View 1 (cartoon, rainbow, N blue to C red):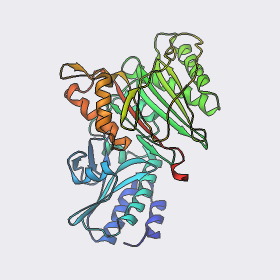
View 2: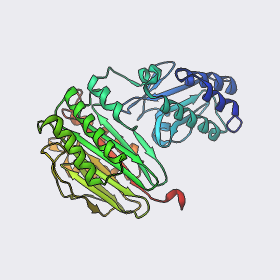
View 3: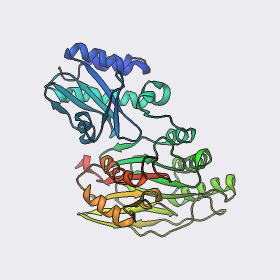
View 4: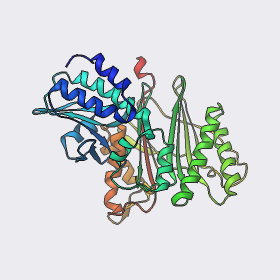
Length: 375
C-alpha cells in the first residue's frame, strides 16, 4: 500500500457523510484485494461491532480488541487491524483480511476516517445505530449529546472518560475544552433520575460553558452556573461539580470543589486522595460565592475523578471506597487513561450485577504532561 494514497484522502473528503465508511471500505477492498471491515466501539467500550456484518467482538478478549485497547496495529497471521482514532478520540478499529506490510499508511488513512466520523456526529444514523448495543433512554440521549467525546489527547494532556449505565445515564457528566494556554475540565454529579436529572445536568453544563467561553475565572464560572441552576430549580435540584483549570505555561492547576466528585492523584507509583476545600453544590442556594484553590499537580502526574456511583459500590461485602480506588489505580499504572477508565469500571461490574449500577457513575482520567510535544 502506497503512503497515504491521495485518491483515498480525496474519497474521504468527497463521500457523503452516511457513506464515508462504506466508500472507504470498498476502495480498500480493491487496493488490498482482501475483505475490509470497520468495527465501532459501543458506548460502554466493552464491545466492538462490525459496521457491515453487525458481528461483535469483546474488547477484552479478541484480536480486534487488542488493537483498540493498545492503540497499536496488530498483524495476526493473514489479517491486520489498525486503530481508527483522531486526536485521542477512539472511534473503533479497521480490519483487513490480509497481512498489510505498511500499517503506518493504513493507520494514517484511518485517522482521516475517524476525523470524518467524529465531525459527522449524529447527522447520520449509520454509525450511531451500529454502536448502540441496546436502546438508549431519552435521558441518556440528552446526556451523551452534551459531551465532547470519550477521549482526547494533545501535547499537554491525555484525557478519557466513561459513564455508566451507558444507555440510561442521567445526571453525571463531564466536559473539557482547550485554548492556547488553558485546559479546562468539569466533572458533574447531578441529583435525581431520568429526564429531570438529564435536564438539570444540561442546564449546569451549558451555564458553565457559557461562562467559560466568555473568559471568566474558574470561581466566576461556578458562581454563574450556580445562579442559573438556582434560578430554574429554586434549590430543589442541584449539581455537585469539580472544576479544574490547567495552565500549560505556568503549570499551575486551579480547582473549585462544589460538593464535588472525589479526586485522586497518582505520582511516582504513589496514589492519594486530594483533599479539597469543599463548597456548596451548584444551585443549592442563591448567589453562592466560590473560591479557587491551587493544588500541587506536577508534569507526569495522573489525576482520576470519580462520582459516588463509583466509590460507593459494595464489592465482596465492603465498600469500594478510597482503598479500592487507590489499589485499582496502582494496578493500572502502565495503562493509558482510556484503559484506566475501562479498568475501573471492569472492577465494579461484579458489584453492580446484571442490572448495572443503582446510581450513575462517571470516571475521568487525565495524564498531565505539559510541553511534551514541544520538548
